[in-house]
Image (cartoon, rainbow, N blue to C red; front, side, top):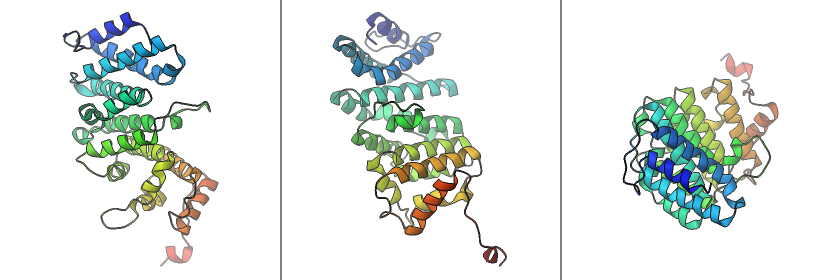
Length: 287
């Protein structure tokens, strides 16, 4: 984290603006992936290192942020590298100093380049990568199998990133954008949307916003979509929706936000597992 020579060499290869050089066509993306890994490690390690190393790591984040502005990824592989680079940079800045958090949240160019789904209409894997990377920044805990504590961004930063996602997609409501992806015919995109919804459901400050979300027609679209078990046929998708229900039920006092019938259905789903389906009375099924 504090190796200046390594940092400078990697930044040089990706065309650091401070060095006034172009992106290396041969080794540039390898350097980008290594810088991304340094950011990822720094998320959990920066607070446990000596102050001098921490200062050098924060300096790297500032230079990396500037260098990413000049990047013009082409093709799926380069775009995936860019998505992971920006998301890990954002996660590192969001859990560092207040000044760096503010700087990255105000960097609409990078946030839009990372979070926009508009230019990837026929690329469900890229959409899934964007959505899953957003979920990892908002709530990193859902991606950890271990019970050890992880560094989480503040509620303010999580909500700011969620709204930035909507702004990057034609200034739409972010929940509306997620539900659109959750209804996609492509399972990869649906799973990505489920990951973000689970991350939001795992943040206490966001539960009310999700459960009370209403569409333009005035219906409780989120709750209706969640409890409609006919809209997901894959085992992976059913497990993902089950995880959302599990996160919601772990929150405090959600009974007052939804109908008694919806709450009991969630409890029943939780008890019976991901494969649970609502049974239809025979007299209704034969009418």
